[in-house]
Amino acid sequence: MPKEVHYVLFSADELRKSLCDFANTHAVSGSDRYDSIEKLSLHKTPEGGVGAHVILKKHGGDASLDRQFVASDIVSALLLSCRRHAIPVAQRAHKAAEAFGDEQVALMMTVDFPKTSPIVSGHDVLYGGAEAEEGKSRVRS
Image (cartoon, rainbow, N blue to C red; front, side):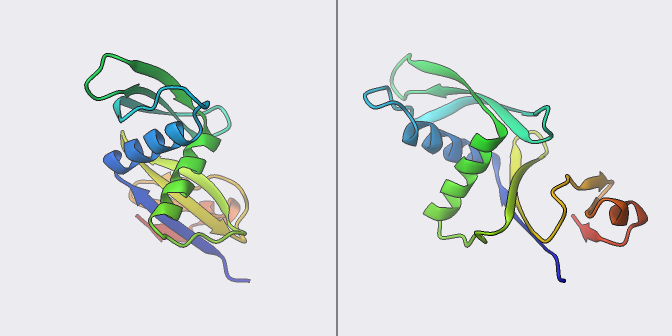
């Protein structure tokens, strides 16, 4: 059976916009809305995903909000951004976020792959568990 891997890479600015939109969309009714992200730092979560710590800021004001995003929040924010930009996403695909550099994130969608993280080796991204170790299932970065 063919296997599929799709990446949608988000720049630092696109990630900031996606997280800000997600925070405002899922804010409690009547709470403050924020215009931008002043600070963004990505980190690996214990489950192997990507989390983020951000400081949301209002333009023209001193109001700010310190917020943590867990891996599922990052994936949800990126999917919301894909929907807004009419980027097709396979409904049956397993979706995960992966960090690329300090502030870039990719939405990785896989079909018929084991739900394990890829192995990054130099400029190669290897998939498929034991197959990846043997170099049989390889995607160039």
